[in-house]
Length: 510
Ligand code: XMP
Image (cartoon, rainbow, N blue to C red; front, side):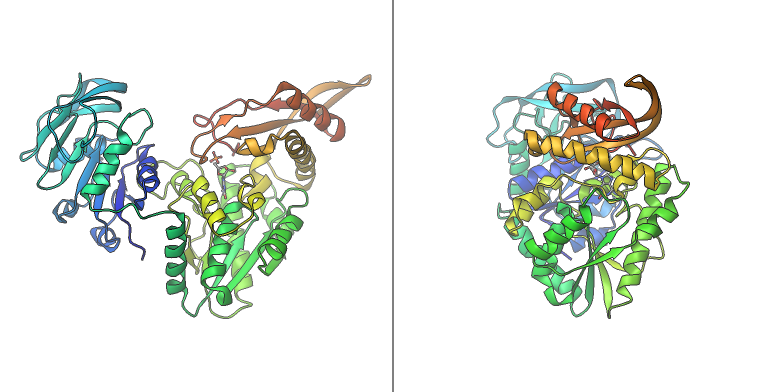
């Protein structure tokens, strides 16, 4: 198992992943673990320090989230943030209660005592709060290090035990010196700033080599950056034991299968096994409209196809996937967050699956994967390809998926991508696609009434897919797309543009 310099226990805050990320940006390898990870699992990571994240719960609630108390006896530095602060106080005997009023947004931090955690930070600075509970007394052995207008104990700590607590979120950009505080904590833990994508790649390659040994790995690729990076890591680690498989599930875009084959055979020099399983997938999806059902069926069918392929080879023990941290958090297998959707490569896996998983990207984000891809020598057009979800066009067709709907969507989608590429907007956006709404509306073409399908254009800007905003495309470009789709695709007479952000919407429609 790989070591982590700092473990971040996830109590469900939407910012938890940012804590790990900010530490990694400073060259310290931080990894997330669910709040209820066993002490054995925590120790196995050999961490030099632990961060307790924020979270939506209250420590005095009946169903409060608690971690294993043993972590307080490991002799490791601990940093509690927001909920983590309350937990640290509660577990050390102090009283936590609802605050008189909730505190969201900016606050002024005043340092009242010099300490290692706040070294180099001005006496007064701006921090960002988001809490409704408050620590009303200090745990014994702890002292106040900073306060704010509404929080007497905004930062407190026990320097001898190297335990600290922050009422605010140092990981968000609005906390002026948050990065410096996290950097100080990493120093307190004795971490050096030696981590970077190159060292991550080396570590992962070594870990894969050790894990796989003489067995074989089946690596499922889609042509997207995640699975291409996983395949490249495996090709470095276990070239002789690698079977790379591409499954045409019938839910791909125009020419996609051919493009993927080209990327692997010509650009990466990896011999690809292509499997056409489109009839199997489409047969299973017939009559199914529920988004979660579609996702589960697709996830399960993928595994069946991989399983059948594995049986054709000897000693295939592992399945490698490009699962990212975003997929895990949204499928709610990490920590305390709620299920948003079952990402096909996480929540959609059947219980009978016999493969052991290799998921080298499960701790990192898409933009970090892209850096890793460049580090491994993948070309920019592979690395900067827009993400395409594993369940493919099935989650872009509202309601039942069938061949006529797929054909309509493919034709519209090709036009959108063509227009974005020729106008230079493809590279300026995170993702661009069409959604077939399966809603008919009335139109007029020539002198005739039409009653046809509507298509939605979805184009978003994002940096890691956790949040997104709709792209401010020029009206002329939108008009070209709309005109061409309506004129060139028989069966579509209306085009709309999605102007929702994530949250509260998601990027995909299902
Ligand atoms: P959402 O719709 O959750 O999407 O805002 C965030 C990013 O994840 C992609 N996505 C998926 N990728 N399997 C994947 O490999 C999935 O099941 C899946 N669902 C969504 C989505 O395209 C966007 O980039």
